[in-house]
Image (tube, rainbow, N blue to C red; front, side, top):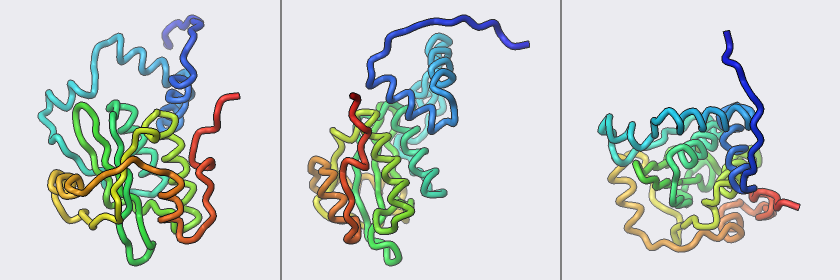
Length: 202
């Protein structure tokens, strides 16, 4: 038998509503179901940081590649669920795809690296997956503060995750510039930065 429910009206900041929408989509929930699940988790006590500490999980983890659309969803889920405070977006050379995306996500409990994904701007079908990823990061407020490296990075996929992150973080970093990133890695395509951002609220 299902639990009784009641209606409850609440005012939310627009940015929080957008973040809930991104999370709901990634988790295949309605916005309402996502909000209820998060409220229940908060009220019942449990938090991902506590889980990492209790299980003594490594402080650096690798997100291994699956399907490119799923890779984008997983990266967004990590950013939202673990309260990411910094995202570093870069590209590495790939003989078949020109360049592919590399991402480092820093959270209070763990740092994650995705350096095995085939997310690329060089092929049109994959562009839509990166659009989804960048729009999600924008909705979470992480694209504005994102960083990148000055040049294409080395392939670190054969290194241990902690060594891969350490190797990449030795490089000079700069603020992430979306138009410049699209121009550099778009394989000559005319990619508009506005297509990779959440539409402004009217």
